[in-house]
Length: 395
Image (cartoon, rainbow, N blue to C red; front, side):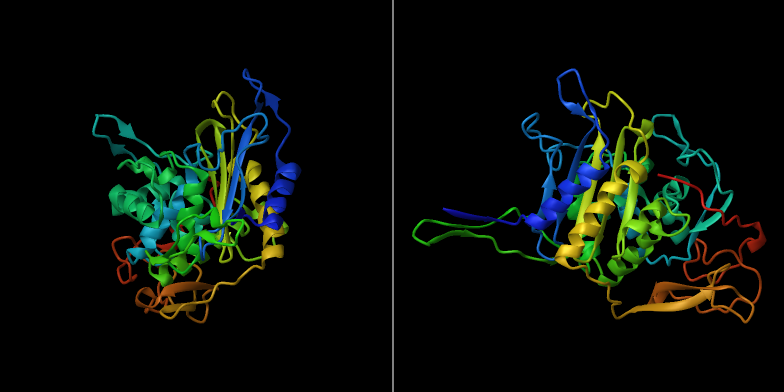
């Protein structure tokens, strides 16, 4: 028989080379299995074809395929779904939340106090782009509280997460367990203009007489507004910008990508997930038994593997560029307020859904864009001099 799989040998080779170059040497655990382990999975977002997959260091040593059989919390990589929900609900990138100590009562009488990765606070508003770039935990939780955890859960499920998700605020920080394949599949609609696909490994089977016994038919289904997927993608390119949690990876990449770091409590899990319109990939590194912490965060441990793989694979497969869909506008806005600039404003470029673009010109000192209660930025708010624009490291 002739069995055709979706695997691309160039992409698989790129994955193996990325692991050889950037995964640190390990030590055997009590079962003789070298730790830490890893998983890498990549697929074509247009048809779901799995182009590369690594399920561990050595198949001869352990047959567990961690790419789809292991489930671990993704940490801040889950924020893709938080900010997809925010954007789909009509909040523009200039909307902000204040990063300061905050607490929420739990149903069991406990109190939940979200903290940033380094334990510090910006003590001022951060707009959506800033919060994503710096992976600010407090801001992500405040947005989840505003929308409701059930809304964030709904969008994660809509995009492709099948694992059980809980309805509490810590969901925003990736505390539910998912597989690397799940994360990869769920990012595909963001890379593919809002169209979801099923993961595919087997394309066709033909017998010795040339009879086709099986052929896979790929199907796309719309799960998200193409404008929202574009806007979210543009926001997550900021992770690679100066001050972003993956800024150190930018020199490795000369292809357009959106991505996100993920690190769990105690440095137990390191993730990096992201995509170009031609390829989506997730990388996880961790100890199978969670018996030991990793040497660094998701950006430092999983990030270099992901960046090396994406650069090599997209060079072979051909990277694509994002195309601005109808209904999205790109404007120069006042960098301080998020409003339309006056003659003295420092300007920056930003994308908006047409219906959420700023209409007012900066004439007095406003905060960065609109408040959560005022998506169009028409209400008064604190003085911009009170805003701390310093980026706070988060993972």
